[in-house]
Length: 465
Image (tube, rainbow, N blue to C red):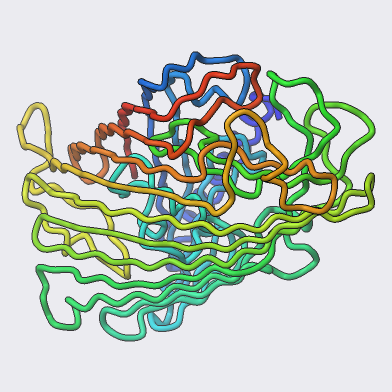
């Protein structure tokens, strides 16, 4: 989709939203309603250092280049109708997805112990994921979040049955069309249960959070030929079933698993296979967080098993891959200016802190300052390769064109400094150093140069409203 066409779609959608706002305001005298304009802008600058690899003009190595980036640019509306109905529609002006809807849902909230949500929304999985994009501790979430279900179309039941306990359970599909669901209504199931023991004990200045999440089901994805401009056109279709990008928006293919699909007789870029690949996974996550006054410690561990298969009409065989993955992170966040984390905890997740004194150039004030340290790691059972996918990485019995590339194990240490001028405006500075277990190379280019370490320095200015 060209940029102009995407811009036209966004403009029309925003006009529709504004028309909805006007209509809601005109009927406000008759219908008890609340309408709010909401959105966020996150503008980043990234400097990639110390990997010793030059930038190549293809899509895969683009993540090695220094860049300015609109990480998020969203605009939407939310509100209530007759107190018991809530809604949200949020449009996304960044990214490559042709569907510009970020979230859009209707919630029935009359009973806080049993609430319902329908539409596209963030699935109830993990403490990091349930912390809104505007309020995450670092510029990017950890490796574990790259495994999660994130935002999907579906329906959910959730609530707080008793003080300090929350739950959520959903059924959803992986994409926007019927291919993603494989002929079923949904096919992906997610659940989360949390408990704040400190709230049970009446310790109002502390948070002792325990949680468990699970995600299970089968989704479908259509393999396609490569779209990289640095490679010769191919007739081999593949579906990326697992991919890790280094934290802080570093190298996009630190580890990649691709399942081969149909082998086409014609050679071209971006051509879809005739048969969809099925991907079944079981993902579990354990959460822990303890906060007292201005200090917070948070950690999560996730474990995933995955089996994927695809039929190749050319060889009349089915190829398959199986793997398991582990991720973990540990982080400390300290509010230098003294804001209490217990004030920012609600419904099983952390929200944004409110500075004790907002910064204003003409009136003074310090805003809120935070220091952060995080260790994050991933490990996958299938070993990657350095120069090409050797026969040892083929786990299929079909056309033997599936591939596993780069480092199956890596860890990242991230340092963070955040300055919240007010509850809606922040500057963030992150330095992330990644160490790979084996040398990684730039995929889809003729370069054979590898690197085992990556350093990324990033800065963000953000507003949320």
